[in-house]
Length: 337
Image 1 (tube, rainbow, N blue to C red):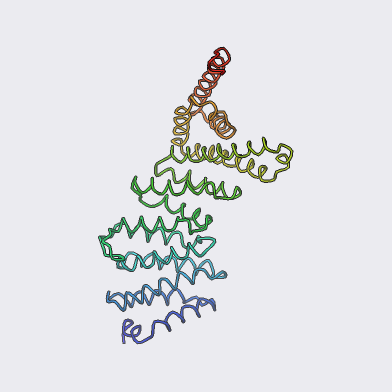
Image 2: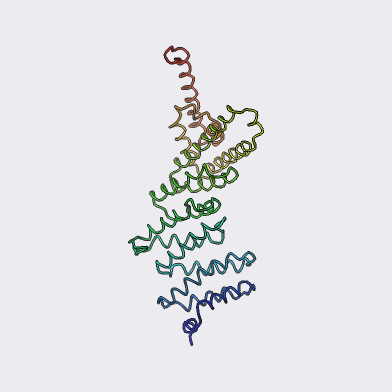
């Protein structure tokens, strides 16, 4: 019997159990066993497709074994990456759904999954229209649906941070990136201060896809609102705020984010240009420009030569405007009233 006939004679559950046993025992031939299943299931019939799909998903579970060797992990990942292109679109969707379920149930997405998930999304985006859950959908639409699922409210923030790192490496349309950024920015108020820097750093990296100014405005607006809330607490009870550990953590987070913003600008000068353009756009609002975060961020980014002149011009104009308005208010009876 050839390999295909041998595989047909063995129950699927027995094949999967053999993979698990070999992986748990540290057997070096587990990757060769997985490869053989794929190679013997190339005829494209429904049974072979199911065998490959279930073997693929089971192999993803094997990758989560904590003490799996780095060599074996690398071999399995490479085998799975090579198989993705051969799957039917319906099978790709079932694999994508596996990742969605995993993201919703886990605290971390897992570095071992990132490259595989990225290729599944990329491959899916180039597929033709299929009927999925009773609707005609293109591969691009399916890709967008999967992305929105893995960055939904049901997914842990730590998972989303890892998933964002994948999104910057796949093709996205302008509409997709705008939709994704809108979804990601709305999570800022719900993220713990200690998790904010890594989340914002990934947002800044993702800005290479576009929507830089929207991302910057979202970040700045978050910190402006947060400053306002702390100021309100100061007005209500100044003594308790001095020892407020929450504010101390927040100020540390604020400083870390400004540092990340500065580092990001050095690697991507367009971020600095967009920041300068944004501050110029809101320059007439001195009450915004001179709040702690936007002002500190402006001073930090002004240390970069390409941003210096634009940022200082904006700060000087904002300060001049604020002074003129105050002077008018002080000398005008109706404005004082």
